[in-house]
Amino acid sequence: MEIFKQADKLIDLALAEDVGPGDITTDNLVDAKAPGHGEIIAKQDLVIAGLDIAKRVFQRLDEGIVFDASFQDGQFVTGGSRLVTIAGRLAALLTAERTALNFLQRLSGIARQVREYVSQLKGAPAKLLDTRKTTPGWRVLEKYAVRIGGGTNHRMGLYDAVLIKDNHIAAAGGIAEAVVRIKDKVPAAVTIEVETTTLEEVRQALDAGAHIIMLDNMDLNQIKAAVDLVSGRAQLEVSGGVTRDQLTALAATGIDLISSGALTHSACAVDLSMKIAAE
Image (cartoon, rainbow, N blue to C red):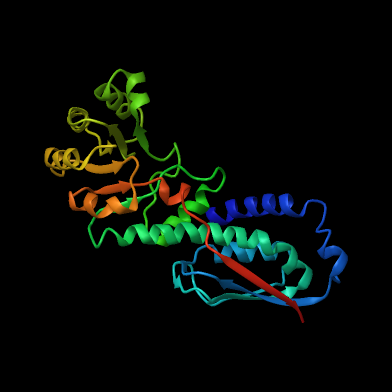
């Protein structure tokens, strides 16, 4: 799976960063073959994400590790719950602890934030989308956490969907020109989205045949007018400074998609701890 391929690269990088030439504390205190066990505890309410990735961190240092998770990714966990019990070489547990928790805390923080955002949609058909505002190198993992939290991934990168933004429009000489040029060069199955800031630009994007029209930083009255104008002939996406408190009102306009970079760039890591002991 792509997520594990990317995770393994990041795990190797993170362990190299943390361990360097060796764990000078553990290596000089603990017998390399001594057995140990541990448990990871949730210190607050959260939505868990990244259990398999945390497991892979420990496996990097001890292939025989026994990693017994009490929950599955996507489940809500109350503070004080034991997430995982782990058994293996004591030295491996001690050395891998922080790296494993870093992955688990970051991804669970995103999943929790997304779940909180989705709850504000109150059953409305609008989908909550992420953006490309992700930690460099972590995109596959962070977008996985968005899905775990109940959100929907926007394009993964610059390669899998067309998004004609304001600078592209300026470079092409206008919305119609940009869409025509793109349609002439990409496969018909590729989604074409156009960023707009006014109702006139919405009209131009609709006439040009855009599949999705992004309403960038428009107020509620403009959004409602755009919904009436488009009348289902293209999907409409609201973007630009979207906060959790705005979601209910935005969804009530009849919009199709709501994107928020805050799902990833502003998510706080959750609080976890790991207790380790020798057998």
